[in-house]
Figure 1: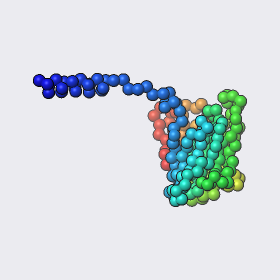
Figure 2 (figure 1 turned 90 degrees about the vertical axis):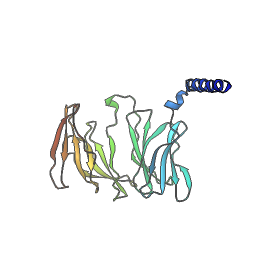
Figure 3 (figure 1 turned 120 degrees about the vertical axis):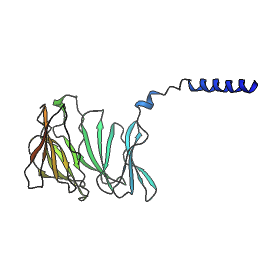
Figure 4 (figure 1 turned 180 degrees about the vertical axis):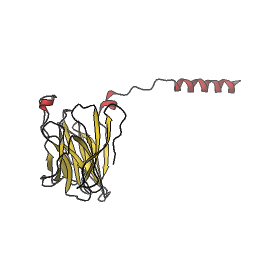
Length: 238
């Protein structure tokens, strides 16, 4: 009888523990900055880059796996580093944003923190309207792994949302125009050589979008798909 009562008491205790309310987590757990995010390993595997909170802002830390060292590359106090990507084996690209505005700056820096290049200057906006958006919108299209001193970028003409393609030197910051937008292309897909082969085209507020394709640099662009923006459609990934 004593053994049965002990077993019953054990079951009741375990049941009570199982149904006990878990401790409440502070809001910072859900809305605060992650201690480590966006881990990015360099193409040759030597460096590991990440974002970590410093000064209540996300900043860049790089670990040199060969030397066994760790270095913080940025010390932002107002701007956040919102994304990072390796542009070659030892040079890191990163985007900055201030106050959550739809305006971004793009920069390049060596893994040891040297040779900072301003590839696109961050512009602080005075409002969130279209009129106050930067006139020159800039986006990275391809890091060009086989051409380590250059990247392929799209630079918009005014506030149209339509960009032409340029090669940019990630040290000197200089641009060389590669191609004029063949129509209303707003995003690109490149091949392994960095050549733009596919474009997603859409007129402003148009209900349909087109997928354009070309077989080579000298081939004409042809439409291979037209679909409703809000309906069933497909988008090439590579």
